[in-house]
Length: 121
Image (cartoon, rainbow, N blue to C red; front, top):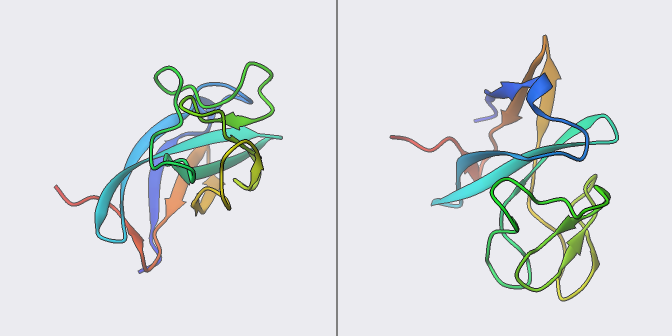
């Protein structure tokens, strides 16, 4: 089921700024995810550190470090590359779970996948 699901207005994702949170059903569990803009492109990931399954945010919707160049886990300092989600330093293992995004007509969409679906209310 590869669906395009509207996430936010493109202008809501500022380069290196606050993330836009959203909920997904990942492998049968409701999980928090986030979208960011980095190097002019939108990216999204599950909000789950690979070191310990905790959300990255150090403040609400803040996943970038102060430089805006790294996604940083507030709990143990794991650092991830914003463009790929791959571990770049600290205690992380592997990378963040990437969620495909597209941008069209001023709207950012996230793409469902076999193990990634909208949360049903």
